[in-house]
Image (cartoon, rainbow, N blue to C red; front, side, top):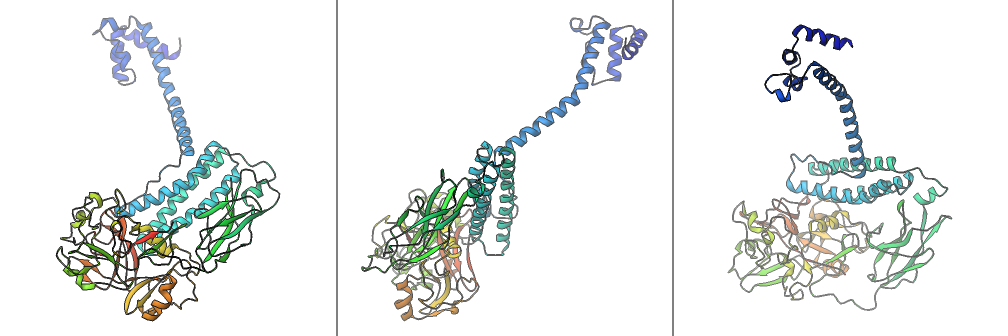
Length: 570
């Protein structure tokens, strides 16, 4: 008998009874041997141990179980760790952003930016999970995607004033999100992908692509192509060219695929306009671009007939997407129910907007949000509706829902749905209010042919924000302090003659400082323009003055702001 059994034997000899031994177990080991001690009692003869030999065997079995607990615990922890690592390597987890101290709209915008990052990284993550590409190829593809994400984050950060607290919060948190998610993808690549084997790695990750010369240029078309250097295989690769009015066109905009040394016809171009074209090659290592080549389309022999109420200038509001502006700010007359565009771009109503009512026979041009004149679900949907108190945001919910944008549902919450008397006079004819992202891209992101996007100016004595089209030429008119938010309107003083004879025919647009109507009256030292995008507490408006230009949710939904409509270019 072992020493332990001998020791137990002495205890048994001393007490000589299973029941007495059970009492000792309860005293010495109240938890460890609770089950065995319970079966040593006289309370339930049917479940009691018959003799001490049965007790001994139960004790040995119980000891083996307790000795195995530490081993099983370590094994369980190891299994959980392996499973967690595997799950993490297969999925780009959502990043939990700390959102204390920021508005609901900022939280939504952070979530929107994170969604874009997830979307751009997902194909690489998926390929890494399957291990279907080599390590070096996917790392190069990730590097190119990283640059695209950085460019996108910079573009989205333009919603906030540069170096403001909101801007710093957005940029820093998106940097953290990007770094974390990219590290997850890098770990996936290192775990699941094998090193490249072969002699064509350099060709795959950095092929040499050349944009062929632009030939046969007409007023509306031109031809170009792509060539590649090296003896690498082109199997599974896409070749082509991309083009547009802005510098550095990408495959997100106008593009067409073609074979090596073949040409592509770029059609539907605008006459007398500067374009940029460059070749591209897409393979497992991402997209590589060739050198950019500029070219000018020829002047047109015939004048292109524009729709009624539309201006000629083309403005990019996203890559590969352009709009034209209406001839002036939107105006409304309550007694006749008539909508129209102002006769001149710089025309404003001003203080007379304080007389807004259902019976006012004059014209107004400052409107509460979602007051299109259609009963789309808002409480205040009439054009003459306005602020009643500081809580009237809820009266201006598009379709009765705080999160809906003007173009959602039926589209009838957007002023552009109306028949505009000097803008075609037909309902739902394509006019619309620019979105928040449209304003951001147009003002702060576009990389136009001339590099000029906007300037503040005084046009015919009226303060305004001057917008220059994508094909603007710096030689057309000398402008000062371009693309600078901080300068005042007197940087550019433009006469009526210069405006009518030079700038407007060349596609320039001016948004006059039309003022803003609040519950306290009309203030004339601000240019406030609606966007179609809803905010959780208010709505996204574009405002400018001396010295700022801002796009944010400071505007109360019931505040009367100006409306300038656009039409998408097909």
